[in-house]
Figure 1 (cartoon, rainbow, N blue to C red):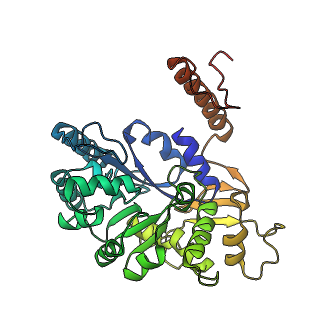
Figure 2 (figure 1 turned 135 degrees about the horizontal axis):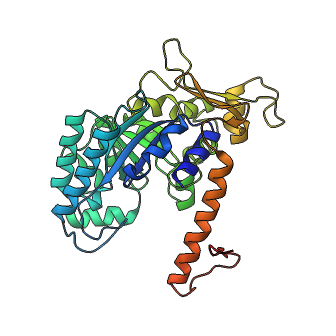
Figure 3 (figure 1 turned 90 degrees about the vertical axis):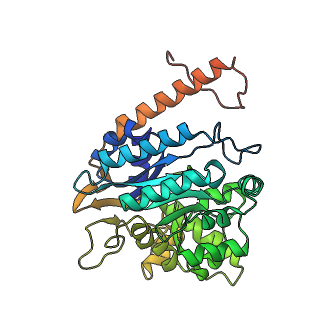
Length: 357
């Protein structure tokens, strides 16, 4: 399934992936042959029985926190700099409501010692805000500021449920905001990108757990922010949004010489078939592609001067096998899950096939 995600990202023209994950050591070796540039970030936390936006008391579990920090550092030792530098490792805190001050300070110290970026899910839901207010008597961004966790090397995902003061806090620290527009649209909650950018945040585009299609995510981000600004429908421009999805993403993940076609930059690029009905006439191609482009328009992907996809054919992964196997695994696991629950919960039209089918 990890290979399926990498394949989907590759087909939409992605060259660099930030994977905020659990137990990356279980599958990292399977993603290296894809040829993608990958920044793994092993998630850490120390709240017992934690869940997103969990209410109730905060029960710290020091052993859990220590174990997650050890996994993060072990991943760094094993994979940072692998594949001639294509693979790198960052550190990750799950969210402010799942991490004690002590845990976040230890993670910040680890980040400094390893000299890597960090990431966190921040202000992603009002339940998170309520939990942090209850536990810390502060808003999430205030909490991170108070313990010294904010920096210009922190990538904060979502930032949807924020006050104006919090936006300024992040901006003063130069925090990177990973705008996940498709998930924001699904939740009906979107960050105030214009305000965050004005205050000093750097904006990038992510997918969260929606389709790993950066063409779709980039366009959705542009459209959603135009609706939010309600300022005539021309800001942000296609060029600005494309910069969020390319140059800003590379820079946030520690690669300043990538994400744009410039002399001296790394040889990471994509090729697009411009002679499509929805893209011609090619008079203003960036605008046409961001407004109307599709993942299927991407016909070539190169990373570090090596072709990963050329003439529409993926060269580094067995696409047919991965898709078939993912289909089999998905049906098998869903069938097992419903068997465990006595078949309860089937939705109309949803019928996973058991392994013997």
